[in-house]
Each structure stands twice: as C-alpha cells, then as structure tokens.
Image (cartoon, rainbow, N blue to C red; front, side):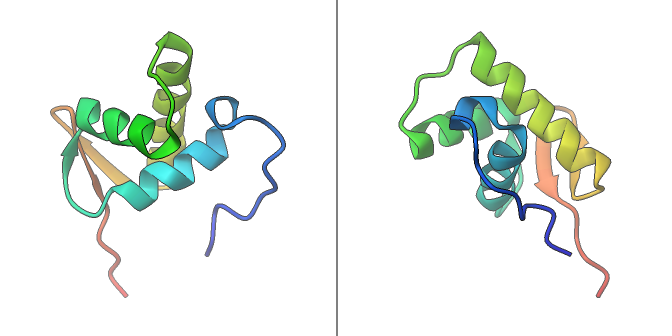
Length: 83
C-alpha cells in the first residue's frame, strides 16, 4: 500500500505527509534523528528551525503510527517487511 499518494498543496515545511515520504526515502539504513533531520534539510535546501523540526517529529509520528519505522534510543530505521 502506498501511504503517500496525496497532492502537495502546502510548502514542504508545512506538509507532514510530504515530509514523511521524504524521511521514509532517506531511511535506507539506521540513522540518528539529528542526522536524519540534517539530511532532510540538505535534500530540501532549507535551514532547520523549530517549526520545521516540529513537522519532522510529526512526520516520524505518522510513520510510526503506520508501523513503517522503528524508533530506539534516538535511532530510526525502516521496519522490515515480512513479505
């Protein structure tokens, strides 16, 4: 199931679903949250600030609620599919 089929109507830093898709794509291997957020900022050519970090934490919450990621000791990784 593709959880990210939605139109982008807001800027990247305001769109939780779009940010979730980018974060999920960046999670090829296990990463620290700070490293992941820095990579997101580099990919989107933006500067991290409190508002963007808030959206990124909401994005992680969304991915976690869909059971797509695992969070452990500030490390994030994709959950392995059992297919």
